Length: 476
Image 1: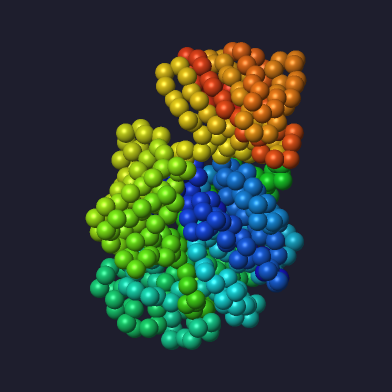
Image 2: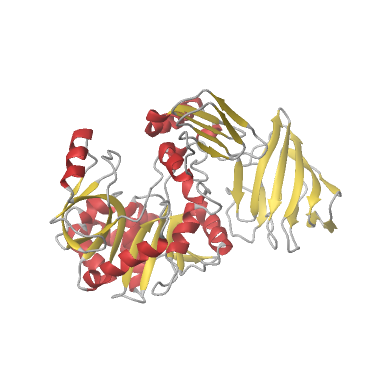
């Protein structure tokens, strides 16, 4: 049995504005109806695979459970990193956790933001690597290169290998310049490094002990002192903070001698830029990729994508342009500058623009909300609450609220008064009143909230009770 480990982190700045720190690309349906995270989880849910282990940050924990539930997957464990420390501490923590029940079991480490169009072929490649992993090898799955890519690290094989044929790995190669990438492509004995690994739990623990011993004590302590919280396993913050921030490649892979590679050429992309998304979307005869309510008039090689309901995006006479529109931000770039989109995020951060990192829809464990209008002393929101979910029991110091239910039924608490509020009914929440909204029904509940007051920030919350065990500083 193979236990998948899904790494769920990162900020995805190269796919701004659709991918932002508060809601990065793995959770977004970039290609098709499912998110990249959901596609990754489904790809590794088959005969021979145990329930996946997920390691993620606290901000994403409820998004992870919600998206897994939506595709019918029950995770084996969800580990919460107190802070991002790169991939090596994350992999080690998961290995130590799995070792408590299956120390000699196989573990497959996979990023959660890749596109693999042929899941069956990928699982066949994994199966081809199992004998080597069981023999104590660290197996990596390299992608057959289709062009001289400078944005990926490469793998040098000890000899050319057929598809799915395990072969000894000679070395890891850092991201090359154009000339070196062309030479490696021509050589035929190099693969792209996809960051996907298969090994026995005992093998990787021995590798960490030998090659990265400074990680062992703090991460072991972080796992040993982890606390269970609503089904999540929170790694100990003090211990985890002492772990060096380093990638699994640098900590172990580039220094290990027991490395095997399995070539995979059945289609793969890490969607590392809008140019790659355009390819995966399926360009038309003129090379245009259109998404959402987008229209191309006399355009060539252009990506036009509208990612907000009702927002029409029209391009006229464009050539090799990327245009991505949302209701709070628009990106327009030359296609050749796709890798520079992160510069836009840096520039917006310097300006203090919330769009740099904050997604228009603010996701919470109970559902989500988005701001429809915001001005001095008032704000209008649309709020969606999942069936059976509830906001915290709370009050505000600076604002009052007016709720209008437009779909479903809300159970509303205002001080000592508890009532059901149905479609087209409303309720007023005076400043300072202790209140809560819940969805007791079986369908999502939608309401419009009108806030008025001197301060409308999300941190104006005094929390009295919360079924999600969030602290006083949490939002929503």
